[in-house]
Amino acid sequence: MKTLSNTNPALILVDIQQGFDNISYWGGQRNNPDAEVNARKLLDYWRANNLPLFHIQHCSVNPKSMLAEGNSGNAHKEIVKPLPGEAVIKKSVNSSFIGTNLQQQLDAAGIDTVVIVGLTTEHCVSTTARMAGNFGYHTIVVADATAAFAKTGIKGEHYDAETIHLTALAQINNEFATVLNTDEVLQALKKNDDFL
Image (cartoon, rainbow, N blue to C red; front, side, top):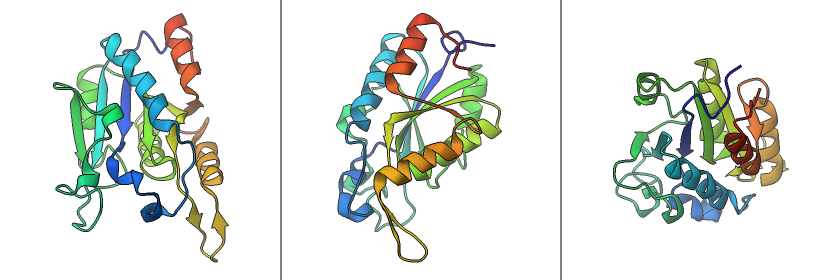
């Protein structure tokens, strides 16, 4: 089995954008307020070790969306703002692979391991992880570097943000991806441990 550290792992930061700070717009409740802080910890490690990383930016085709280009919510959050020269991939759907060249960039660089963080767990993180797994990448989703919003069910029932987050992770774990926490990823990288 390959170890995470010798497979040139790519960090994929999904949609960590200012528009998600408007909690009421997305349902009034979000879990894991430290998701961005943990994403930054991983980003710092990737930068310090010159590992490949990709910032995914959702650019909604709906001009009224907070995430539409030209709207302030489209901008990356300052805590993980891309540095000059870092790859920024724009998308308009839930998957970071659809309508983008992410797969081509990963394959051209010989990357077979992806570590996914960002927003939101139940939408773009999950969709990106599912496709990454189906494409054959060794896929890690970082539970405490992702976050979800509360949802209303088909019968009007309320699902709190933590429940949405945990069930979204449960659905992909050991099927499309391996779900770990930030410290587990960092410790394994430093020790050259095998995640599988």
